Length: 400
Image (cartoon, rainbow, N blue to C red; front, side, top):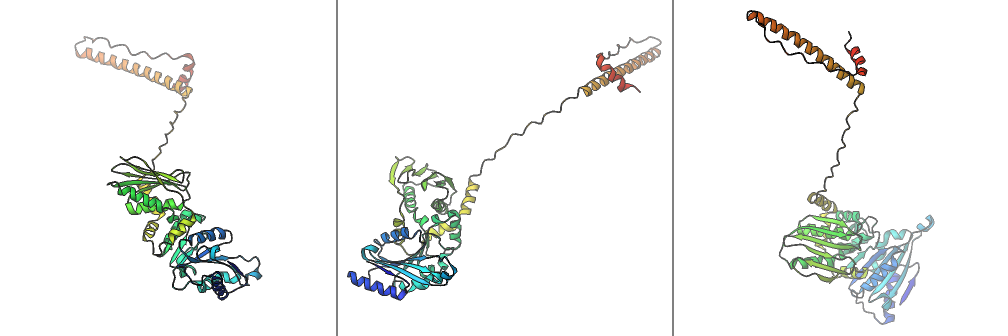
């Protein structure tokens, strides 16, 4: 059954719900929780379908809050509530109320939702897109025991994890964390089969996928080992490789459907690791309404701490660039000729001086020995002969 109400109130919506249940013959309320979905018009259909399918496992009253943007300043001052009520087969196993808020009432959605909550039943609030920075302090989030966001839908998913860590409160959770539940179960089961100590881990996946970062932070937090984050073409998470003292353990999923579990010393095994739809993720989150301490611990580990621990454990290699050889200065032919000529002249002068000193020593030696002259001194070294073109610079260099 479908009931449309225009420019209505929360009281009229409650009366329409009671009347609708009586008309279809189910006056009793057999729902276990109230689920509030806060979204926009663009994503309303997908969110409504996921919540309706999840209600088949968890019968609930689903309240979809859509804030309509007014086009003119006059429309912004006029508040109006339009409601679409689905009961029976159209709403799964529960009730669905789609609330479209116009004008100033869109800023006070909690006042509209509060009278429609099921009495004495838990409340779950889900933001498929555009989640608030602090869900616990949001007016709608303050009504709930469980607050569900999705970092993957954010414009900068990895930075969104940092914001979630700063504003975390018990009861917060993220669908990016729910997506890695099968991975965490499979890795824990693999480590239970081998008695070993993990020394390092590598997590491989898409670049802008917060589930990869959450899995890496969970492993680093629980195993207290360096975890390297590497990139791949996807889809989603593609591999986790652990180095242990008993041999490597790897879980590879390249096609997004079937993974291969490899343990050293054991045959490879194919395991089902299909990427799940939003319906399955929401249904899993509704199974437990208590705070998720494991998620809180992994989230508080921090992306920055993960990156810093990786850079410390796996330092980047230092690339040394070869130093270019410095060329020797070109020789000056004129300076070379001058140096050669000057050296030759100095050699000639030295030879002449040595010859005179040798003669004087010979005369003195003869006088002292009674006139007997010593053998003649060896002839002075001959000065080298310069070529004709080098003689003129030499003359200029030695001329007074």
